[in-house]
Length: 257
Image (cartoon, rainbow, N blue to C red; front, side):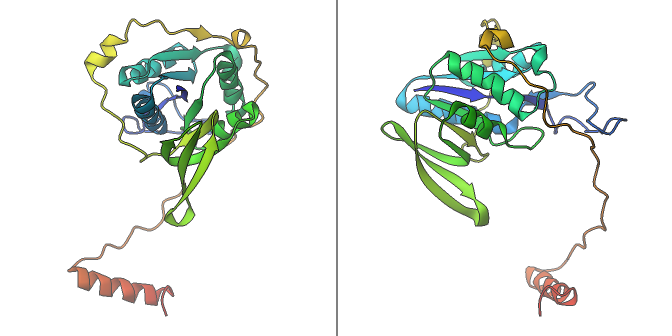
């Protein structure tokens, strides 16, 4: 099975203090520490596990500048066989549709049985996977937290509202957006990173892919930090005492009658 996993280089929220810029339309990006998007790690791990079971290969692709190559090498050290970098000024500042357009060009250059994305990336829009599937006219499922390989199709589990699980069968080729928790991404050591440090990663421009990025239809106009509300009231005592106090508070605030 040939699997393509779309990954992204994003600010590491554990290593950075995120601050809004003076214009209020983005975060301050100078001196930020970057890493691979968390959801994408789960997608790559799932792809590797599938290939370990049924055979094939895993390719990772990202859209970004030269520095984005580091996330490709990180995922290759994890176990992906190949990496592809899409880098072009035409995609700078691209919205979800622009990124999906670039990825569509990559998919159409090769033949893939399965395309995976993370459920969402740093802007939280969760739209690239669905847009890519629509552009390719392929079946799509989001928030996938279980995959079983069948003959020519997949059985997938999706996380839906209320903590419920939805099971579906989907024909391949298809696009799936992977939810965290589907697996436990493996540790990437220094030895693995060194092993792929000199591997050549092809870079494609928009013209190489035969695509063009339209001006973003989505414009971010305002970032802000929500105002802090009143502090939480911490209950103390035994479990029984805290439960009793909680019931009293709920009754006092109209939560219970």
